[in-house]
Amino acid sequence: MVEWTKEARYQKYEDADQQYLAELTERVNQSKYRQTFHIQPKSGLLNDPNGLIYFNGNYYISHQWFPLGPVHGLKYWYTYTSKDLIHFNAVGPTLKPDTNDDSHGVYSGSAFEYNQHLYYMYTANHRDEDWHRISTQQIAKMTKNGEIKKFPKPVISAPPFGYTQHFRDPKVYEKDGTYYAVIAAQNIDKQGRILQYRSSDIVNWEFQGEIQTNLDDFGFMWECPDYFNLNGYDMLLFCPQGIDAEGDQFRNIYQSGYIMGQYDMNQLTMNHGDFHELDHGFDFYAPQTFLDEQGQRILIGWMGLPEINYPTDEDGWAHCLTIPRVLTVEEGNLKQRPIKALEKLRSNEETALGYANKFTKQLHPYEGKQFELIIDILENEATEVYFEVRTSKTETSLITYNTKEQKLTFDRSESGPLPNPVEGTSRSTYLDTPLSQLQLYVDTSSIEIFCNDGERVMSSRIFSGEDATGIKTSTESGQVYLRFTKYDLKGDTQ
Ligand code: FRU
Image 1: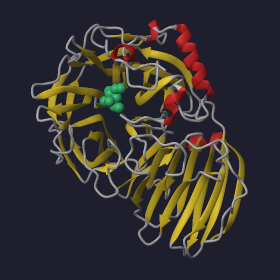
Image 2: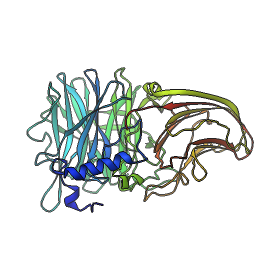
Image 3: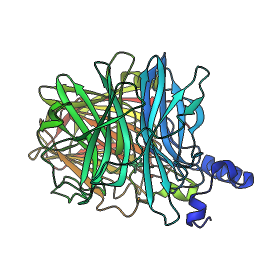
Image 4: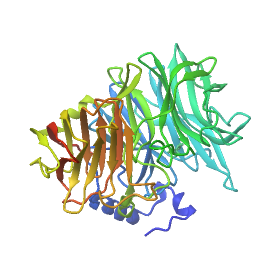
């Protein structure tokens, strides 16, 4: 086993011992937790999705990558292209830490189109001799033959006065020919903020100021901001760090959510309601959005969190991206639905209609490890309904619906080995409307639960045994009448 000293973490992929890499890859390929329809690292650690864009007939999807082991070290961008967001071609590492400014990592950033070319704006992370962080914002351009060429110097060379070096994750958007970048920041009072810059030529960026929200004291850092207008609502997404849990909310180590309302991009004022979590599961962070071929707003997140050990660590890899979701605002509420293209991965449809009650143990003859399961709740007179997947004699992943409280809970206490340290073994959310549908996407080591046609999502990693393939439903008391539709899902990301 490697001891992850500073030197080991900041070793370059290009300089890594070939024998070490071959053994690492072998170990990863043998891992029983490898996913089949989620983007995952071929070795080492994946984190934030980066540079998402539909450009010239192709989707470009990159992610933060430390290739040499399941820890946060010297970060690269690893890139895929795709025609449909369900099949992916690996391009490989595209942005590498090969300049003085990004000597300690090519950190997160976004993609945009300018004069018919694809550009990236990203954070270059440098550490000086005393290990002080120096963050600059850089631009790179994709040339006609697909090569990525960095600009010779940073376009934003330092945070503005009054902010610390926690200054990163530029998300570029364009409005009426002007380019804007929202950037994650921390003020010198150690409060998370979002700063906005503006440019007409993408080379010269003017600091406009800090976005005014009513969340003045809401954590010590806000990572990965994103701004867009959706169905007439301005949406500001970000990942606050350092917020206390409130009941069932904010239970993960760091949060990822949004505020919505009206944003004045010149005055930098955001009139908004409460901060809402985007996802109510255990493993979701640092999402980024982009527009697809049809102009729909798509979100992809990192199905993982920092500072947690995962059971795949011993197999030499960690984390994956979520499936892409379509975002809309309907009657003032954000909806998140799986992209339609996922239907193309379906095979072996099985359906069943029936009652479940306290005594039902194994209503469903079918089973699986990689599947989509749609459960329509047609009548519900039960006090609590228990949906279980990935069950075996010793394991189960349990979704409980409490009818009276309209509360949905995901419990992974018996799912298998658990990530750690993680607070608690269940996550809950109160629904806006009674439970009418669950749509589950289960891959080898994850579950994404979409509820009531986009009303809530809960994403979690689960590390169940290979024999844990059963699906069950039962109730506490009373009965529930259900329709099940199940498909095997055959992806090719393994
Ligand atoms: C979020 C984050 C970003 C940063 C990147 C480094 O997970 O901390 O703020 O750019 O990861 O990998």
